[in-house]
Length: 555
Image (cartoon, rainbow, N blue to C red; front, side):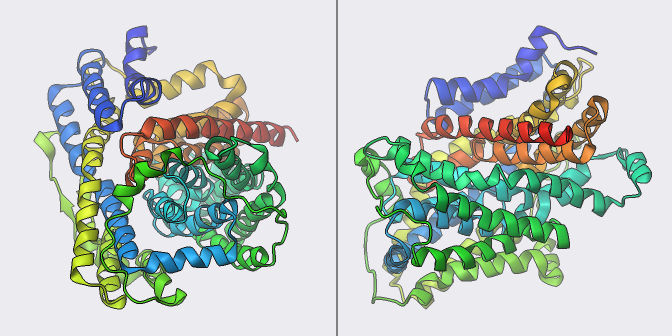
């Protein structure tokens, strides 16, 4: 069944709402997202003919689901402010300067390599929530810190949260009625499901040997071109040898780990190998230009100072680098252990908070608070209180600053997540249609099949952009991508690999991640500026991946 023009416009309402209100009109997310939610409710109820109980239940489901990202954001803010008031951040700042005083280099090491480790361990948009504040405290302007942190959190997402986007997202997305739509193909090829999933991940990371390896260069070019005093892209490009070296220092080990061990640990181990290679090389100035760059336009510098830099109370005695980094090391260790130690994972996930059946619609939202990164953030804050011998007054200031900073984000998330849930739950309707995203994707597949290698990653980025989850994007569209690939004569592993890459790209511009990054650098209300910088990069990422896939498919 084809959709009408009115239905097409209705299905695009969440996307148009974000683009028009946030990007074009530059409204803060705390205003834009409630308006977008209202428009989506009207479109769903009157054009898509979604029953009133489903509309209401979707909004309630979304409000409950919003607690998850809010909990993570608050935890990240709390840890940042705790570390700053303890004096640990002064030591960490000095440590990075000792590696290199060049802000371009610091951005790459923190966002690309350390961020990849956090992504591989936790996912949930956690890397940007950690990396952006670190950059802010090293002297990077707030908006710049948010933008480059989001750009960096792209390629590692394929293997985020111990491989969840592939191992769960793609796997579940290929199932219909309890059976895999790829079953016949797997039988013909003599493949098992784990082999197939690993092949999909291999296709994605192989393309990312080019696209992903260029990300550090894009980061520093954006940094100098948009946020430097001279607005010079050349100042970023002058680091091209080092940037590509650091890109390959992650992507090559990640490719090898996926090839030999599967999709669980490429991001975790790849980032650690990358850090082990890059940090010593950087200290020896390997491939670094002679000039050191730290020449920002400071016009925006004061805008994020109050929220992310609470009042200094007591910094305490100077501490060693090991002591300063210990909370972050503990955080990383706890995140990894919670994902890979079965008894610990079982215990953490055993405590579930559930809405139950919402309004008798069958919609249920669940949260496992002990398993979320936010819980580990807060635990580490308490440990830091003792470890760094903080005064309770300083700890209280950190808590209060975090509570104040998150208020606009509560409004933004409280509107954007319900909008997403309604968008996805629109498959229950009186118009005889699939859900809004599925109808849009099917329309694209039927009309753009001839250029599907370019379209496939854009489809993947589309749902990640709206939903804020690469895993959910893979769940939503893997079936479509598999079917479309077979129809256009594309190898299914390659088509699904493009879906994974697209979901990665969507991660750097999705509303929830942008709101989170803006909040932790004290720039809530400036989300439109961030999206305007990351959106073109995400689309370029998709198009380059599609071009490489086209060439690959014809070799």
